[in-house]
Length: 189
Length: 296
Image 1: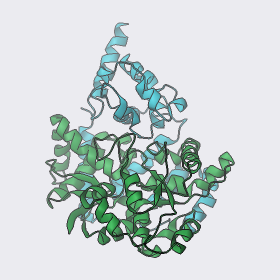
Image 2 (image 1 turned 90 degrees about the vertical axis):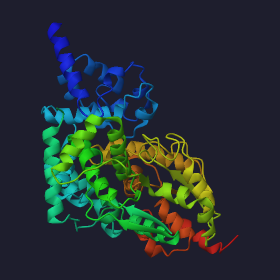
Image 3 (image 1 turned 135 degrees about the vertical axis):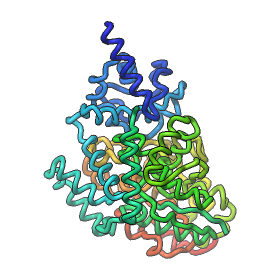
Image 4 (image 1 turned 30 degrees about the vertical axis):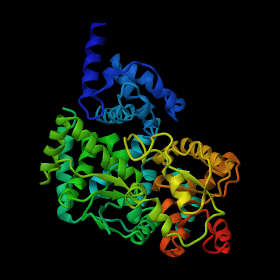
């Protein structure tokens, strides 16, 4: 039990050190978050349970679960939470930590999509949407892209696909990278 | 004349929602609003970036706001995701001196500083609250009285707030639709989630949520839906065919950006509003309002 408690404090402290995770200790386990979540039924552990597990120090179970990756950032739990703990932000914190500790689930493709998205933003300062789709499908499941062909045709027909990608001035791009590198370094200390 | 710093965001600039950007600019012009695009803005990072690096995601927004701070104007964006990503930086900086220090330490690496003074606004907010419903009504040239419109807010324009409307039962667009002379239909799920970007990695999850929204809009008598978010429009419009296939439904409901409906009411031509970019064509639904003639 001693080890468990020690782990518990470390994990909660780690969560609290990232913007958005600070209020996890205030949770009263009322379940309003789970009752409000449109995707709770898809999650291995629904939001209330996930918070209880995090506070019990179950770091690996929490961070390797698929739960937070089903959060669509609809913020319904956040506006309803009677303790103002911002469960949506907390989900983002758990996603960050899962990535940082190399525990992101492989069963769910969302971590790969978010990674692809973020590396494009980091690299270009913009979000070339077509580049995102292509890279994501190549990285995860090129065959899945087949099912997207009719959708892609409809998009081309209606001028919804743009191949040109907006780029920042080289100087701005350098500045942005320096900022993001520094942010990563400061991270959750 | 009203002045703002304009942040279009990637989707409206050169992504799937260029029609939103085009129609927003045309409507702003008609309402005597001057928008100055923020020079060399970067992507807001949206929800994916804050799932990878939370502090970095705050810094992406903070760089934009730091650029805007020099101009001294409110920043306005048509995209709900950009809006929330920009807006939450102000909340974080206000609430936590520690986060404020960290954000500015990172910004300094690129030669920036953000004091936290910029007001971030959604396009819908400035149209209805700065310009006002009466001024909007006075610009209406086309009779849309036969058109039944479902107002879809989605999530991030009203949540987490506090913002310009109620987080669960907003009313802004109902009043806007009435000001434009059209009919707003009841839409109980109007502020529920469409699944957002989960449509890429978890298509079935998003299609199910989108199905519920389409069903709810249509069963309450809507002939078209208006949205305030590029991604909501993608899910409801582009993925409507996939929803029909998966749920054996037969939806054929056009999904317009709210700025496109405003532009139509103001008599702005279809091309300027990018109406041909809707995958589900609005032509049939709009035909009856054009034959109904002006005025009325």
